Length: 71
Image 1 (cartoon, rainbow, N blue to C red):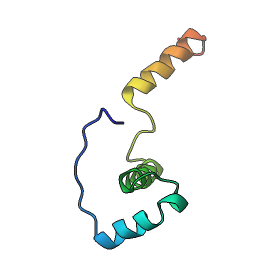
Image 2 (image 1 turned 60 degrees about the vertical axis):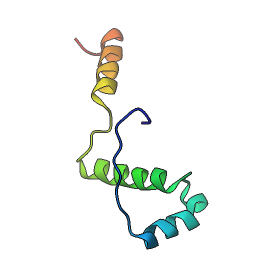
Image 3 (image 1 turned 135 degrees about the vertical axis):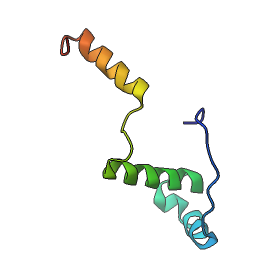
């Protein structure tokens, strides 16, 4: 998602420090990567974020149509 717009979000230093301290255990390369992954997972689970972009959905539809699964 490097080509998408990004915003700065302020996070309590204690939380940032905990993430930085445990990046390896959390499976993330940076604080930003971890926070984005956690927020994305939560928003997906709550149904507030689509699992695919509009472009990805169109590509899936095109492929299914090419395979004869859609009219």
